[in-house]
Length: 614
Image 1 (cartoon, rainbow, N blue to C red):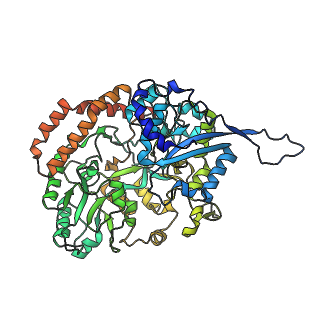
Image 2: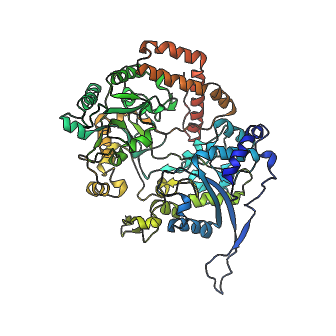
Image 3: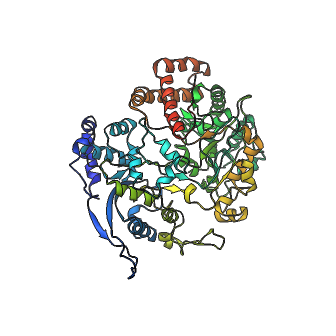
C-alpha cells in the first residue's frame, strides 16, 4: 500500500467537509482508479499435471489494499508479527488458496478516523477499510453518494462464504444488522462468535440470537473479604449495602485508608452495568430488550427511581465514588488496585482479575430482586455479535473483494487465528478434537494469532466459531448446559483441568458456571436478560438528522440527571419534571422512535415481526 497515510491524514482532514457535500468520492473516481486492483501477476497452480489431463488453467492473482489499525491491546503489533509462522501461513493461504495479495497498512487506532476522513475527502480511500469508524452522518453521506460497494455484489464473487449469509445461515444476523433502508447492506460486521450457546426462548421471550454459554455479566464481590469478616454472600440489597460498609469501615484491605468501594462507573454510561440489573434496568440508554424487541431507556422505567434512591444511599456511605473506574470492560478485567469491593464483568474473566493481592477472589452474586414486581436481570452477551465493521470502496475489484471475504471466512483462517500452526501449537486427537500444546514465549510465532497480535491490523479479525468451531452446540436451557458440564465443556476440559489451566484460587465451581446455577435457581423460564450487544441498523438520512439534532444533548442531559440525583445535587422527586423537559425540548420521544425503527429493520431482515410500540 502506498505509504504516508499518517502524514496525509492531517492535510486531508481539512478537505473533508468540502468533499462530503460535493458527492464524497464520486467526483474523484479517476484519481485512484485501479491503483492496486489492476496490478496482477500470473500465479500458476502448483499441482502437478499428467499426460492424461490438461494443464490447470492459470488463475490471475489480484491485489487488494487494506487499511487497518492497531488497538495496542495485544502483546504484539502486526509489524512485529510479520516474521511469525502464523502470519506467513495467513499470507500463503491468501495467495495459494485464493490467489490474493493483501497489501496492508495499519495505523494507530486514535488516528484512524481522522485518516479515513481525510482519504475520503481526497477520494483516495483504499479498497477496504473500517467504514464503521465514520460518524453516522458521514457514513450515511457515503452511502447516499454511492461510495460503498454493496456486500451482496461482493458475495457474488465469494462462492465459499456467501451461503453463510443466506436466510437461516449462521451469519444471517450480520447481514440483517447492517441492512439499509434500500434493503441492501454495505458493511461487514466480523463475527465475535462462540461455538457454544443457549437459546432460552419461552412463551414470553423470543430470543433474537442465542446467548454465549459463559456470557453473563453478574455483579461480582470480593469473596475473600466476605470470608475475612465472617459475612455470607449477600442475597438482598440491604445485605450488599451492609457488606460494602463493613469492607470500608473495617479497612478490610489493610492499607490504612477507607477506600474499599463498589466500582459502579458513576458518571459514565457504564453505571447501568451493575446493581441496576437488580432493578430490572437495561445496560444503557435506548437499547433493545433481546427478548421483546422493545427499545428500553432506563430513565422512564419503573425501577429507575428506586435504583437512584438505593445508589444515593451507597454514595452517602462513601462506598460509591463519582467518575470512578472508566470503561466497564477494560477496568473490570484489570482492576489496577486492591480497593474494588464489587464490580460487573463477564464472569468468565473474574479469575484473571489482578488487584495486587494474590489472595483476591471475586465471585459472582446471585440475582437479587430489588423491587417487588420487577424481575431482576443479568446482562448477557450474545453468542453471535460483530466487531468493527469493514467496508469496500465502490471502485473495488469485486472479484478481489470476494476472494478477501472467502479468505477471511475460511476454515483454515479460523484455525490459524484460534489455534495457530498445526503440529506445533496443536494436533488432532483420535476422537476428532484438538489437543493444544503449552508453548513458551520463544514460540509465540506458532501460537493462535487471535488475542496475541491479530486485531484489525494486517486484516480484519474475523471470529466465526459458530461456523467452524468444534462440537458447535446450542442448548435449549440453562439446565441442559449445566448437565453437559458447561462452562468447562466448551473449553474441552473438565472442572479440574480448567482450574489447573488458569490457576483458579476461587471456591467451588468456575464463576461462569456459578452464574448459570444462579439463573437456574431463579428460574430460567422467568429470566428476562438484558442484552450486551446492540443490533440497531444504520440510520436513514432522516434519522441521522433527528439524532444529530437531539441525541448528544439528550444523552448528556439524562446522564447528568442520573449522576446529580445519586450524588444528592437534585432530589429524586425532581426527576419527573426533568424528564418532561427531555420530552418537550430534547427530543426524547423522537430519539426513541428512531431507535425502534432502526431495530425493526433488523427484526424484519431476520424474518421476525417488527415491534409496534404505543
